[in-house]
Image 1: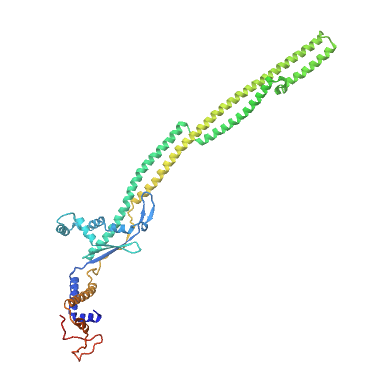
Image 2 (image 1 turned 60 degrees about the horizontal axis):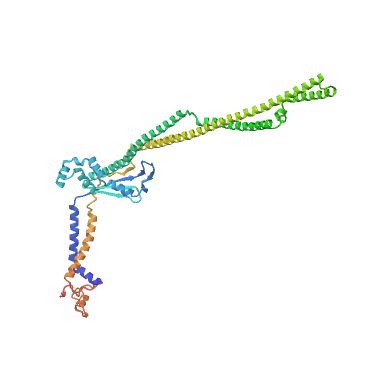
Length: 469
């Protein structure tokens, strides 16, 4: 089939096409006029949500949370919000609604759930692209009721969002309250252990006492070194005084009395030598000089022995002093070690107290923060444009439906025309005749000579047509 044949078919079946178009348009117009008018009210809300973890306190913009917008849409279309709308508008208290509910459900279920389901069916949520604005639309036969329901959904969505944000904070506040009590008890217990330890050991200031005892230990160490040096020197002198010649001992040599005795002994011996040259051994002067020399020598020996005994006694005293200083040093060392151990134990107890106090302060701060946030009634969702009663109905749209019916009716008319042509095929041009007979067409008779020659194609068989059997 070429385009000329198609146009001939349309011309021949124009009545079917026009009738189909007329019926389609008429039906659409009648139905559009008969259908009840539906009004659509829209309320716009702005989402400025920030996600806050009630335990950690970390804040994250809601736009960064995955599925944020889808979650908000699910909240708006939830049954919880719809039930709140039913209660806020007092829809379940109407006797007419109750009667309609009993007729529709035969008394099964509750009126609130039934109304919530009906409201959700007529609710339409449309988020804006690349923004945080969400449009809440409701369709109804009454424009005032549609606007009231749309605004009620926006208001109840705000309240539910506050509830969803506050309830976790209240639970977190309860958790922090319990933890605060536990940490307060732990801090008090740690402080009690520290105080008891200080009382048992009589500790006022460990650091100051440790400094004093450390200085005393250093002094004793110095004294011990000095005592050891003195003992070594005394032992050397004692060894020389006992094993060596007494007269060669430094203590003996340095003794002034012994030096005087030795000088006197030398003088007496000189006198005895002089007397012995002049007098006989039995002479009284000789005997007297000799007796004086012996007396001086005996006195010298006695003083040397006394000095040696003094050296031995001094060495013994110094050894006793060294032992005493060594014992005091050991005691002082044990005392310092005990103080170090006490300081370490007390430091561990102080760290426990500081750690418990720090944990208690942190949890107390979080408790105060969550308690304040849990009592807040401000929502991060605000109504941008409240719904107003619409003036024009949203459906049915007579002009749009008519335009669509013309397009659809044209398509249906073309379809019915082609179907009628296929069921009752006719010869409408010389091309159809040539195809039907399988022979060339030699000529065409123009039955209407006076008819003006057509530019697109010739009028063939306008009044006389051959039927193709």
